[in-house]
Amino acid sequence: MESQLYLKQNREPFRSRNKFLKDLNTHKWLWLMALPGIAIVFVFNYLPMFGVILAFKDYKIADGILGSKWVGFDNFKYLFSTRDAWNITYNTLFLNSLFILTGTVGGILIALLVNEVNNKWLVKFYQSAMFLPYFISWVIVSYFVYSLLSYDMGMINSILSSFGMEPVQWYNEPQLWPAILTIVNLWKGVGYGSVIYLAGIMGIDGELYEAATIDGASKFQQVTRITLPLLSPLIITLTLMSIGRIFFADFGLFYNVTLDNGGLYSTTNVIDTYVFRALKFSGDVGMASAAGFYQAFVGFLLVLASNLFVRKINPERALF
Image 1: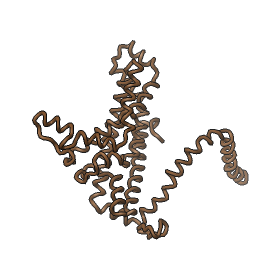
Image 2 (image 1 turned 90 degrees about the vertical axis):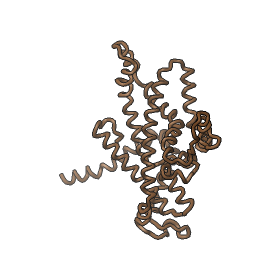
Image 3 (image 1 turned 90 degrees about the horizontal axis):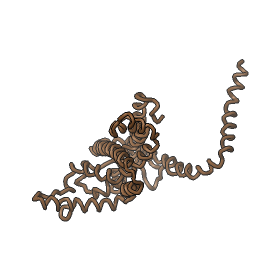
Image 4 (image 1 turned 45 degrees about the vertical axis):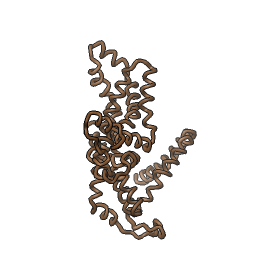
């Protein structure tokens, strides 16, 4: 019995290898098509992971990555001993949470409205008009925002002055910028998000709506009883993916739209801009790497926690 068990256990790796080689030969053209994508992911996502070691070293250019002195968690201690660490963490989480909430609600709402338009030419026009801002550079968007908020020549201050109100120094009022950045981010990205939800709505069987109409259901009831429940797997998946990047702020939004104004750092300074300035002004690669590692690690934990929460409620809708 022991010899048979030994032979069986030693055959398993060979069977697995033969099965893999057979599958590789059967789908060789599909693997060949996927090879460029696999190579790109490996080069740009996995090879850079070696740089994580910099977070634990006192990096010197002359010594190189491997030759630099190992300092353990000293970079993290220095990072968290400053008030900046907690400020950038709060700003990143708070603002990205606002972006996820408004982007999800806005995308679903626009998708529902566009789905009700029967004229196909109008649908194409609306989709193009909403999708266009997504392709505009943040540098260009920053000029749009400045033309609206400039103290001397901004459109909003001109309107306020025409009503006898005092102009606002928008770039000296940090407490207003969470709302401003949320609006700008929504304007730029809501069209892209709505396309994904619109595709999900179009995949719903039309007979469900016909049956609901015959039963006397209103449009609102059809949305709440049919559309949203059937869209919930897509909503949960996209939300979990967004939570996975909740610690990764959009650098162009926070750096360009705010014009890198130091007076706004208290509410707009996030991890990405902090790392950039740490490298730009102090040249401290170790501390910047520590901040980046902290950013990735906590984001990973948030994905696990969010997925676990969804699995507890409904296991079928969890990512894994």
